[in-house]
Image (cartoon, rainbow, N blue to C red; front, side, top):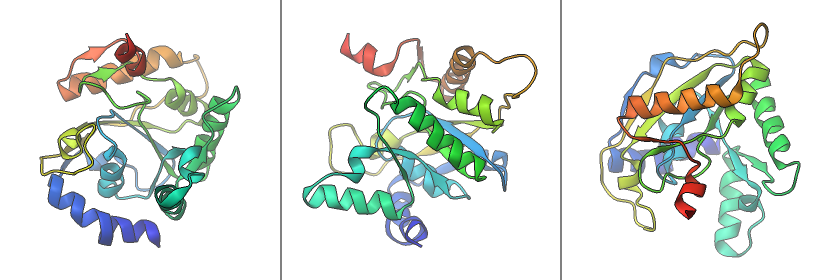
Length: 219
């Protein structure tokens, strides 16, 4: 109930007003069955725009801190992420990555839509950065198709460092699904991830950087 309320009543109309999103390629989204949405990451509200335009309910893996915060903001985050059906994942400790992949696999095995930003963090400058291999590892293990997505304009609606949302034009393009067979010749998750991110860069017209965003920004 809350997911639909946020999408159609509370946040959705505001996001449409601010971003006037132009969407292409929605016909690539299967009506049923598991699917992985892999998108570039420009702004905090990227996930909100994906949920807004996708015809099916989408689930993200949210960091555990969103579910354990204190104070008014912490309580609001905990309530929002819980009622919207997002899945908490502990990203600390040696088993964190395995737990995250297990949670994603469970979403797909139930026939759901899992969305992820393979870059792992927002791009510091709008370019497309090297992706983490988790999405492709899950795709290979489950046989779920991967749909590459290009987001643009969300960083103008939601600029880094600003608490205010602004008017700007948002564009979201869904590419054709990519299939990674579970049987036969083994698929190299690293190589497949690199190919996926380069494709997203090409489709977006943005430069590809063969470094992780957080590492590159720190250097």
